[in-house]
Length: 289
Ligand SMILES: [Fe+2]
Ligand SMILES: [Fe+2]
Image (cartoon, rainbow, N blue to C red; front, side):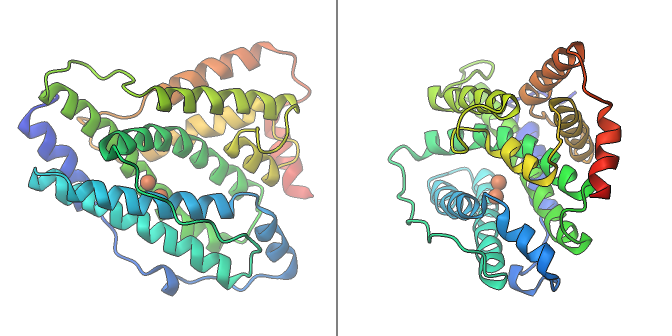
């Protein structure tokens, strides 16, 4: 067992992150030619503008945070994360341009004044967003919403986000123990309120109330891919995909636990409710339309 907060803990989470880096150039990936139906589907996905803004902002903020860090190994790892977030922004910008997706060019994000707190908030947000993004990605793939080459391009991006959240939960725990503040708790009211808002949005999405802006980003996206998506199927796929993506990490590393736990809880609640039909049949059904 590795001692959390120790030098060897730091070396393990930093080296695991640095050594699993993959080199690629977004503009040179094998972007497929799309038939008119797939092109229309790609353009109707509701989150490209938001994704572009979020990734660009993350690239700027994470890179700026890295420059403030004195510890050389932590700095190297977080510099790399900044590079990956910047590359996500470039990838989304290229996709938008290449497939002529109509968006409003987002404003340039400003650097926050407390950059460590911003990085901490961002890390908690990534834990939440990535958990649902893994499930949404698989739901889109099961529904054959776009041709397979698209999923081949985005699969490594999902893995990069998995690496970011594993790095983050280890970093935040390491730092709190190293600084003598004990076990990690939610330091940030902002991150906690983000979780609460997102979960409330999720409930609204499945209940079919609230406008689109208010509804959970991931669940709204997932419902774009599969009309008859049920909460049971959504949570089951999110849990399954999270387990799959987390299985690639060294078991000595900490992993994000809150969302899988809450989702398991949500799943056991929805399983108690009367079901319209078996969700497995609904996946099959969705593949035939
Ligand atoms: Fe990203
Ligand atoms: Fe990330």
